[in-house]
Length: 235
Picture 1 (cartoon, helix red, strand yellow):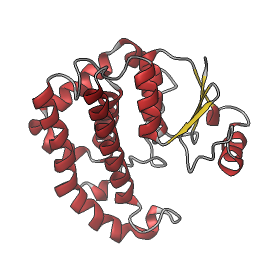
Picture 2 (picture 1 turned 180 degrees about the vertical axis):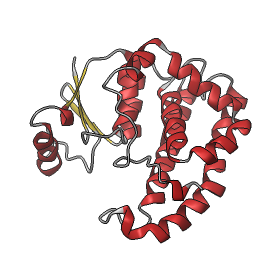
Picture 3 (picture 1 turned 60 degrees about the vertical axis):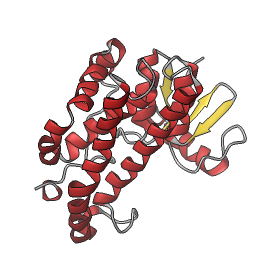
Picture 4 (picture 1 turned 90 degrees about the vertical axis):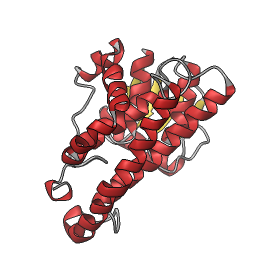
């Protein structure tokens, strides 16, 4: 089966969490939004639904006759289907919890540069963004990354279970994103996060992920996505 991933072209965004699972699992997929005419298909799915399912927003995924939306929901489905999730029920539930917590962090990252509204450009809300980013750097980054570090201290090399899961792939992406958007803050946090950064490196070295990171399919972070590097937000 070839999966169909529907997400905005030109950026990693939330779609990247799905791509990482598909890439690590070695599954074939079509990145619909990046193809000719793909945006029309994506928008049509949002307006009229796809196979009876009306997604609220991208990413959404067609898996045969099944259509799924919401990032953590999609990655859980793929992880459990393709050997990237714990087999025991408590591990599966823990992986889902971690993925959803990371999704909360992703939303907070986005709000650092769009704290007032998503409908207006960053440049129109710079003052509010500086205040939001200041709190995010000092309080929220340490809280979230510290929790992930502590989870690794309790479980071992992975966040849950005994092998790499979609939750670990999500942690890899969030660390990479934070290092791009808030390099100064993450450099200061590094000594407190040895296990989390080791997990990042371990994921990056996995054969399928290493190939993906070196390929043109892995778009660079940019100022159109969720993780944006604005120097004034990370002094």
